[in-house]
Image (cartoon, rainbow, N blue to C red; front, side, top):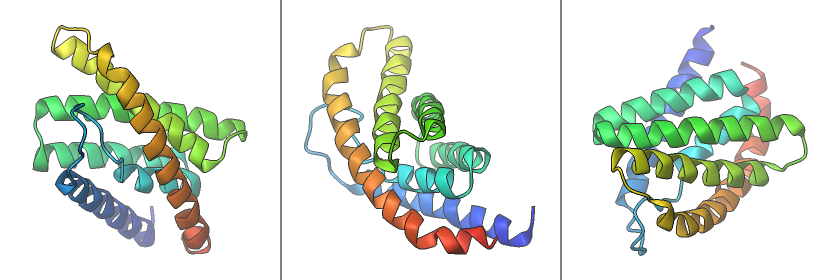
Length: 165
């Protein structure tokens, strides 16, 4: 791995952590726990399209672990890992089909992230958390569209720069 790529990784991880912190400061006016904008997914989806699945997965896992150790706790890390891994797998599979736009891939990732987190919450709390799923699915779709559209624009603008690395 060359020096430029290592520097790019560092910048993207820092950006994802910053977006995670910014997102934690934004009050969400809904009584359902777990509704978020998914700002960090912007970094991951752009990396998926511009750097490839391997690099995007590494960035995603490093970001989840660093954010959990810096701002969270073990439970938050488990929720994030479950949501992040399931979301990433779904996004990679849909991207490979070439039948979905970045916004469509992002929506599926947002929904999968919420499903993964609900599954872990149900296990950790030993109760059925599926009642939260409708609100989380709607929020995952809305956030997924917004992040996907923004990600498309970011990817378009950085495409030439990333290809030179």
